Length: 117
View (tube, rainbow, N blue to C red):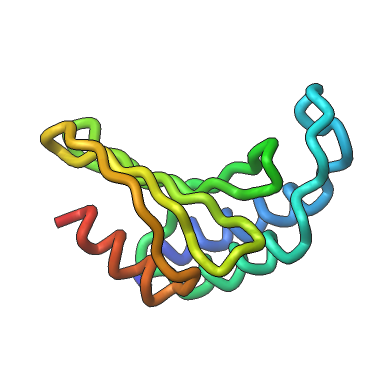
């Protein structure tokens, strides 16, 4: 992991601490706090990712992981209590793809590597 990625990883760990503090109605629309199991999953992923994402809490008990690429390409994944990560990708040509992968840093690193090729 290069130094910039490590710094971004530390930033994501700090952001997870903030997400953990969210209380009911954190979004002004009655959203529940993000489940601890989801936060722990994201923490485990972040510690083992080669390229750090941006992370955001969602109103549906999940955390969204996002990567921005060249030419408006985009990859977003939802981390939930389940054993898979669902994803939505727009590639450099504008083609949209959805799917799921196992909730593991190995699978996520592989997907992200393909995304940035």
